[in-house]
Length: 545
Image 1 (cartoon, helix red, strand yellow):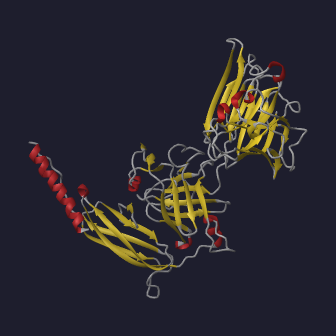
Image 2 (cartoon, helix red, strand yellow):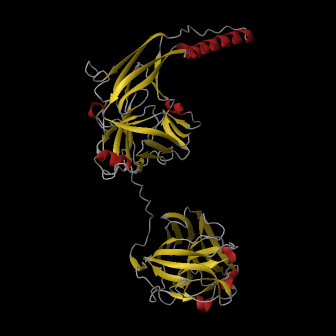
Image 3 (spheres, one colour):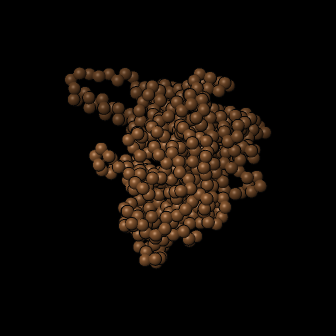
């Protein structure tokens, strides 16, 4: 540490010589006196002749003094806390008697500094109750050695999920309470932090974080936008630290090592658990590294509720939940059979059948299977189910929960055709594609409408796509709401497609529903040479009006 101090003084001296040699004017830096005579007093709570390492709370109060010091930094476990008054409290939490090393840096005029290090032997005896461990990381008392974890987030959707008050205050966020979602887009709400049973703390930042000006620089990140005393969207990646639970003074306390923090970086890493009476929720309090404010957080281990889309139609009028094993319900579904004209007009290569090999209800799902097999002159088979002649409707909301097939060349679709198709043909009848997925891109889905533009005497289309994750391994909800004003499509209740409807379009008469997997063709593209079979699983189809 002495060498570090000397290098700083030499640097300042060199700068002074440089300026005097390059400029005729004289500059005065003022008196620069290195802090000296650093003294650190460590008071271990509960320490006496019988308990030389304290009462087991793990709490130690530090007080530093020095000659010519303007401020102090306390450094422990890689984390710095600025304390202008030279006072700092640590809650050490490693069970048993352990030696902890704390360094105090005394900072003087011009930024020169000197330091001193102290070691303390501290006893920590606290063992967290089972219900707190269950809340924090999913501890199972019946299987105490089992690995477990829980992921948490700031509960942005409620008012007073984040705020501040006076240091030592007992009223939650007494001076300021953020409104619901008030801090959206600043780098806090998309953060996720996971507590593991082995004491590991993992933090997913999604690329940026939110914190206090100057203090956040302790992270060593970059960028960000200064907004008053806050720094928004400070660039910082995911990280891992460790966590421990203690109860100094009987107050349950969550401590994070290193730079560990929750939601908003303030240069301190020890959170008092103010309340945990609500299921899957905790209220936390922490004093910032400047000893300026107490900061308050409400965190939850529950996922945020999906945004509710403003649907017009909410009265369920038709559904198939596919709860009866066997063939699809013949009162609701019929089939297209064969290869159609020119591969159903799209150069598709499959033969549609009504066999159980290609369409069956099993375990609560409709299973449509596309297969590579020689059948009636085709190299592939699949199924196309439709409600034509059984259920037709005008306007409403269609909701389908489905898991899509994988494999290059598969072309799944959830769509509708105008009921007058047999008489007027396509595209005059109109087509609404609720969901289609191309054979070459399983990370997006598209929606489309097709019709005949009588003004220009040409086929017309309107198509939009959106990204999707795990389309072939997870169920997603595909929703289309159709009114006399618009056709709107949602993926998992998030809108991504909207077409303005009008009396000149064919979307004001009866349509019927279609579910299928095509192979190859216009959107299927080239089929993987190793393809054998793949399925589309449909949990339910519902129509609301």
